[in-house]
Amino acid sequence: MDRTGPLLAVIASMLRRERERAGLSLSELAKRAGIAKSTLSQLEAASTNPSIETLWALGVALDIPFSRLVDPQTTPTTVIRAGEGTPIASTQAHVTATLLAACPPGARRDVYVVTAEPAEIRMADPHLPGSVEHLIVVSGRLRTGPVGHPVEVGQGDYAMFAGDVPHLYEGLTAGTSAVLVMEHR
Image (cartoon, rainbow, N blue to C red; front, side, top):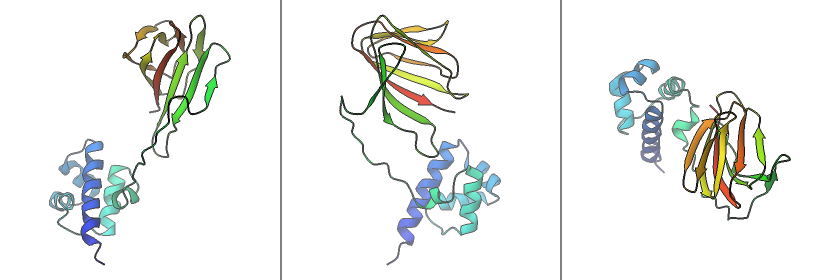
């Protein structure tokens, strides 16, 4: 069975994706990898067979493992129905967080559903340096953000703020919920 054709297509697709993700031009990546720009162009067009050495050099230049260029990882569809998952409660306020997607190896983010009720404030300690919180309010209203500079957000609103400083969550209406993406840079 000839698997060269499908493998070339995989390599071409993954190479182009990773080069664009890194924000590199064909010329810049070729220079970093020590290969000819024409060779790189042919690889992205799936019109030439790369050597192990060439793929290894490209992986190093892109700061990715060799395997990412030849074995694309597929992301399975995951569904977590409303009310499923295990909520973790705050001891400071009527606030819970339910982890929806943990950060896989190599990625630096987690996804949560957060609920917050009025009359109590959840004070959060700083997370890892460079952490950023992205919050989309699903229902209700809340006050959130760095201590001293919180913002009020309501249903459909998006807020982004530094997660590596003390910050807070305060529900302003009953039944407030939001999706929180923790980005760790």
